[in-house]
Picture 1 (tube, rainbow, N blue to C red):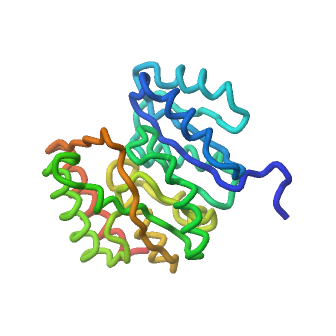
Picture 2: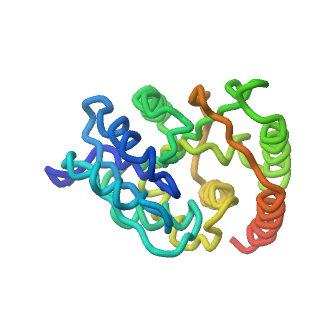
Length: 237
């Protein structure tokens, strides 16, 4: 039976170099609706004051904790670290820069429960409009979706969006074996869950008005390389 003090939802927030905004962002997430949340902020080896400011902000809330490590590992590494401390049966991944506003999380979770699936992925295609989202990033998203769909036959088109909800059982069975910790982490995780028989869907999510996420050629190369690696590994799962 569930423990009396166990949270309903664990929100994992990977953070890197967010010293100027992390305190305010924690406040926004901590003040969500009346579900029993626990918020776990993971400092992914930041070299600025992200960790110190996060800990200062977390001290004001009983349901917010901060963890982390010294050397940057990538978002996947941070989420694996946070999952070790999560206690709820519903686990949310939410990027700590709040490129995806947390105010939409209650409705997102309602949809997750309504569908009764193992994974719900946020889809930001409709929000990626010219003038608000770089053309190169839009092109990358479309290309990456097409390639991952063809190679790994996923039923969702967007794998990299920083808002997802999972059943704990789905993560417990698939997260520990992952060795991809950087840009293609989400892709491998979803592919492993799907291969294990997990159910998943996507639903539209909104982007922050100031969102202007960019991407470098080095990132493009790394994502492409890791995608091919995941495809080859998938034959052994």
